[in-house]
Image (tube, rainbow over all chains, first blue to last red; front, side):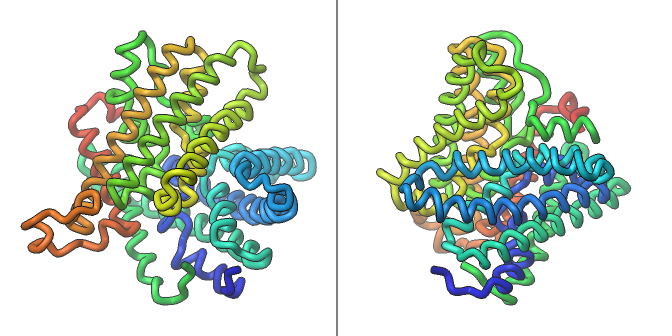
Amino acid sequence: MNETAAWVIFIAAIFTNNILLTNFLGMCSFIACSGQIKTSLGLGTAVIFVMIMTTMINFVVYHFVLVPYSLVHLQYIVFIAVIAAFVQLVEMFVERFSPKLYFALGIFLPLITVNCAILGASLFMIIREYSFMQSVGFGLGAGIGWAVAIVLLAGLRQKMRYSHVPKCFEGVAIAMVVTGVLAMTFMGFAGMVAIQ
Amino acid sequence: MADQQLACATCQPKGLCGGKGILTLKEGAWANNPLSIQVLGICSALAVTNRLENSLVMGAAVIFVCVGSNLIVSLLRKRTPHRIRMIAEVAIIATFVILFDQFLKAFYWDMSKQLGPYVGLIITNCIIMGRAEAFALQNPPILSIVDGVANGIGYAVVLAIIGFFREFLGTGEILGHTIPVFSKWYTPNQIMILAPGAFFALGIVIGIFNWIKGPETEEKK
């Protein structure tokens, strides 16, 4: 069992072990939806919520269903099914009870099923042998870290519209290089806390 | 923006590959290369390319899963109800990923440890989903296999290029072997095997591909 305190994992997941900038998870939507700060903020919020909930559900499913019945090799298919089902459920729930929120978040929710950060968080939780509280801290921290990164990049990309980028580097290529610089900045936090 | 989000949601590549056989092959491996042109599936491309060896294994995994899932999706394409096709595709892909994962765990334990969660993350790799959705659902099995091979190879080659340069510049070695004169003289640039190096390498590779391909791809943005 991993002995690190839950809040340390929470801080580390935001800064030193940012799921996007050090583990490269959730890059597809990161690149595609970071055009504007507003959209990226919406997507970030949705990711935080779904990530913390799915890590909790997957923790329970893994330790109380898969392990006792020795079905661990099925973890991928079960996790992805849980995530897809949960996202569907949230979508229906939000649509029924808060149409306003539904229109704000609506289009982002289906995107989240294919966001590998969500599945990645669940897999890291299993590999690093987190306890329940640690998983909650990790899920929340990873979600916030992802949201912070995408909002930062969106801001930078908005500014970058006014700069002269070489023709062949326009769009995705320059976004990747800027993300690299962002990742270097986050490496400055490295001495703060460390998890694995 | 709305188009982009939609494209990101279903991971639908830009155009459908028309034509047959050889054209499909060329389209997938070069003209519409999944990684450098469509920019799909970058998560694993960035994460595993710190060593050439890992990149090669990852490339092999993607080829295997892409071919397998394309074949099965294509065989079942007339029987799958349209509404649940996404779930069906994910289940098929996950099955092949589990096969590969179990194979790695049984025969190459060290490699399996090194790749960690990224083997499982092939499931959410947009390329495979994208090919199943955009190609295998409309085309007969043989052509779908060709398409799977083409896209898998296109992906694996770019992965190998990035892996080669990151390992070469980051450690001064190739496939874990030192190069006689070079390794002594060269001071390894640690940043290349850490996270930022991955972003720089991929950004530059995409830029160079755009430059080689010339102006017609630039309308994409």
